[in-house]
Amino acid sequence: MGVPSQWLPAPNQGLLVSQTRLSDHAPFWDQGYPGMMVTDTAFLRNPNYHKPSDTIASSDLDFLTGVCEGLEMGIRKL
Image (cartoon, rainbow, N blue to C red; front, side, top):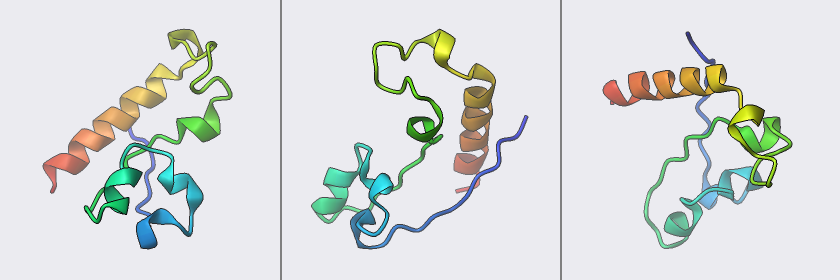
């Protein structure tokens, strides 16, 4: 299974594309540490994201599996 992916450089600590700052890495950027954000864009695809209705049943587990498999392949190539 494959999930299409994109590389999106986010200069200036992601300030030009605010969605790139919605993860835990932004405070590290702000302190001058380099960081990489890996996202499956759940906050854009799942209206239940981080709400009480955000349950396993509201998740696309096949998509999540593909994201994890792709991430593993990418890390192995580093």
